[in-house]
Length: 217
Length: 248
Image (tube, rainbow over all chains, first blue to last red; front, top):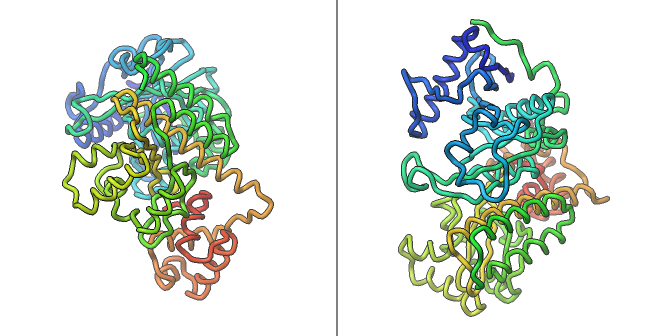
């Protein structure tokens, strides 16, 4: 099940947000060794703002297994603030109709390729449907370059915004790698591409499973 | 190689991605890839699913422009499983060049000989861009040439071209196969059985996993082989992966 919450609902859902930030800390700081402004074993940064929109997947027992954060690029863009060198050409990085995805995690409990694809499609299908309903034109993000094939496979509409560049000392350094900026149009076709990738029914993105009521703590 | 403006690499790569996503004919995609690579000095390219042990090296080939004599020599000598450029995939799934392989690990005389033999066909260096599709296995985009441009920016651009080109070709092949009159999709049960065959399970093991008699497992395998037009199980697995029927 995919749940979405607005950053404005953070105080009303404090426990849920604490779980999300702890999940992110565990993945990015402890496992991937990213240098992040974490505090108290929680990954919280300046992009965790009231304008942010959070999407996350939960198992039947309530444990979180996927997460992504969307922010409006006009006010909160990691790409524009820290990674403008990843973008080449005349792409506008800030636009009212372009949102940015960050802190993307998909870690289903069942470790199989098929389950991973489904979990990825559930999360990104929900994000794309939410964006479509709000009239957004594009979503953009910075990815580790090794993930580029899977984003192209999710939807061939995905386009790079620049060539790949090393970060954190490059791929041979712990916590480093190669990064690139990508952008995907928001469209019904992309929603269908994503659902096909995850072998999900076409009703998934608009069905009752997508946008649940916030869980008030 | 003519000297290029720094932003030309990115621009060409973006244009390629934008053009290739709208093409559905596999042959048009192959032509676009071949033409684009010439700008970087890559004379030949092969796109293929890397064969597993005992699998036919040519069964998973989606595109090949290397000279027929080169390919024949390579296949006849069964180089796929010993060529250091291919076996490097056991160490990394990040893109690398042939010169990286020479530089990064000690190679035997035999291994160096395989790489040197390519020079007889006017091929001195190349890139390997590995792609792991959602169906599993490893596919490679492997351009090479006599004097390819291998600057950091050229490599970054060709890596994007490789990923976008290989995925577009794979998708187009699957769709064109499914559109053929003689295409018969596998049943759900056949897909399940072939998945377990692909990961190396015996009929007895599959019968326990799926709760069916071993003879029924074999019946499903034989039916899948007929639909996939394959005489052997290994060929059927490669074809099922190529068509996107199974994942491993």
